[in-house]
Structure formats: C-alpha cells, structure tokens
Image (cartoon, rainbow, N blue to C red; front, top):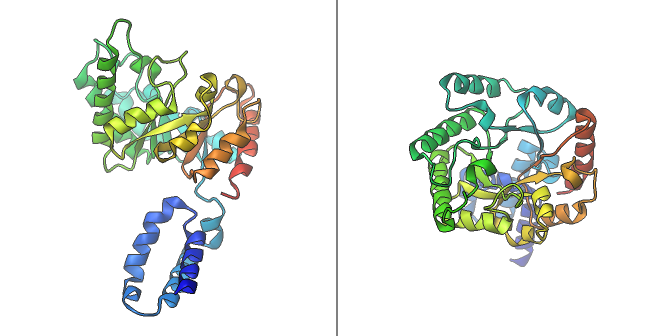
Length: 322
C-alpha cells in the first residue's frame, strides 16, 4: 500500500511541524480514533485524523511556526511594555526575589501571578552569596532554596529556569576541580528532584571564561546534563557567550538533542540585530535541527523601547516559515 503511506506521511508533515504538540497528537490518535486501527479503512482514518486537528487548532496554528516564542529578559516593572511591544513572554531574574525570606517569597508569588504577560522563563537561579561549589556550601540551605524556587516557578507557570549563576558556581582557588564537578552534579540532581512533575526544565547556561571558570561551552554543559541524565536537566545556548569564547556555531548541530533554551544578544552584548553576529548561520542551524523551544533576548539596552522593538522586528521573520 505505498500510496497510502504517502498520504500518511503527507498528513504528518503538515500536522507534526509543531513538535510541542506531538504528545497531544499521539494521544488524539489513541483516544479519538483507536477503533480505526482495527479496520481496513486506513485512508478514512488518516483523513479524519488530520481534519479533526485542523478543525480544532486551525491550519495556520499547526503550520506557521506557532510554537516559536520570543521573550525578553527583564524585571517585572518592564512587563507591560514588553507585552505592548509584542513579545510572547518575559524572562525574569529569580535570585532578586529573595526566596529565603518568607515575606519576600510570599510577595514574589503574588507579583508573578499579577504579571501582564506569561512568566515562562527565569534566569539567575542562585544568588551569588549562596555558594553551590567550594568549601563554604550549605547543603540544607541549598536544598531549601531549590524547593522554594520550584514552588515559585510552578506558581509562575514557568517552563524554563536558567542556571547561569557564575558567582554561585565558580570554583574557588585551590578547590579540587573534580570535587567541584561532583558538587554541581549533586545540585543538579537536587534540582531535578524538585522539578520533577512541574513541567519546568532547568537549562544549564555555559558562561564565557570572563564570567565563570566552569561550564564555558555548550559541550561542557552537555557533559553535566549527561552526568545527571534526567529529563528535567538540559542545556542553553547563549549566542553572546559562544561568541565571546569563539565557540563554533556547529555545536548547535552536534548537541541538538540537549538544547532547551536560547539566549540572544549581539556585538558588545547589545540587542539582536545591532551588531555583526552571524545570525543567518545561528538561526539557520536552529532551523536545521528543528528547534522549537523558546528564545530570549538577554542584552544591554540604551533606549529600551526602541531596542526592544528593533530586536523583535529583527528576530521574528526568521521563524515565520519554521
């Protein structure tokens, strides 16, 4: 039945472009059309399957890059402006919320709940004074902080928490490197424990060597994610940090299965499109690997509103056909 399988694959080419709906698609098959698997009318089954999805979501939602969301890294005070400009979400710094203080923790939950646009991602996981590597770590304090972070992230309906936190993770002088790596793996496991079942993924952020002395490349981030080997732990690729350390953009292709989040900037860490970064290649590789997660601009701005608008106008067209 070669002609029939051509129809099957044609339908899936259309309806499965949005990878984030794949789980729904297969559940939809099993629940709505399970009887068709036991009949001879496969053609009717697949036409009906495709038609039902198109009716529920609309053709454009399934075929025009509807899952590609672009956000901006900022504080909540900028949320209304970010929404008005047209970004899909805001990426907030977690550490400044003061999670270890019960009063500021409660206020943080109220604040994110009142955000005018989705708080889908967070960064700056750990404050600099809460060491997760070295002789001055406090395991009980770290675990309590992670538990509160998971509670806030769940309340915020977040999907990504970025672990950059160079000040917290830097390896102290004269501290054994292997010991530092073991400590990081332990912290990542604690994070995975707390994030399990929440829908939140931790994205390890490689930082350039000026900002951190451990996890300086996508490959090194993947090394730690593989050491933990849990679905809650993945890796971020930040164009600025990759460029600072002259990391080949081909690393995006090599580590495609581990990428969960993307950060954008441009020359001098200014806004995307303002400098000389090779975005044709960067975005081209992301398209080649079928990346369908979120991307955030994390950059310096001189004229916030103008730079935000310029960044969105620059980045959005790359994804219209994805």
